[in-house]
Image (cartoon, rainbow, N blue to C red; front, side, top):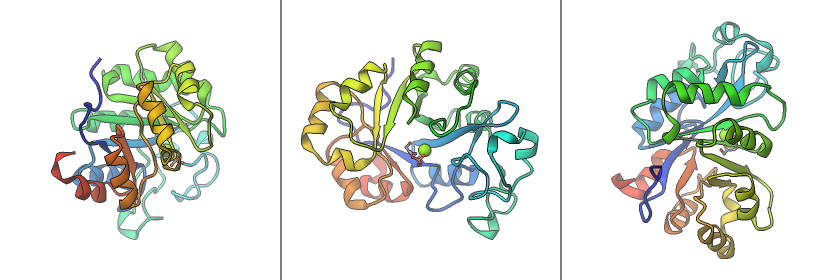
Length: 252
Ligand code: G3P
Ligand code: MG
């Protein structure tokens, strides 16, 4: 299988929810801006509509980033598509809609090195989410350019059971003892720790020894970006892809 990022190369510049410092997160505006800003990968969050269509939105409920109310899972795609997912960020984004996973694949399938698809099923259950996402990956033949990540370890195991070749990555926000052992036991390809867990050289050495690529988040501080570039992590997930691009030059 093709390695997503070559050894000794710079970390992949991955825009967190798109270029979410510049445009409304998890929308085409944020994804387009990310590409213009130098990102080569996108991280985005997937929930399910009532009619089991994977849609790109971070929160389980609609209030923060749309003019809708209530849980995402209680509206059909048709209903979700009537909502405005841009005005909360700035008035000129009025009319921006919630994208589907399929629309994102269709639009960016030839323009990205990596789709980091985060399954947002750690707070609520979404029966059928894994199947629906894997079906789209198959349809667009993007298996070699995706990592499915989640805080939900069981869901990552389910993905690998359905499709053993798919790459999965565990996201974590609390300390795990010997995280490489746990991550390997889940069959994961990569680790997606909060960046604070990569400050300890012993942790970095453990991951290196076990040959587990690192994709820390959400790295917005330029000093942290420089530190993680020097540690040769596989990818950096940031709200500021433009800043990471400036730090790494044109070569990332
Ligand atoms: O993929 C890592 C990161 O996105 C996890 O946190 O809440 O921003 O989705 P969150
Ligand atoms: Mg996320």
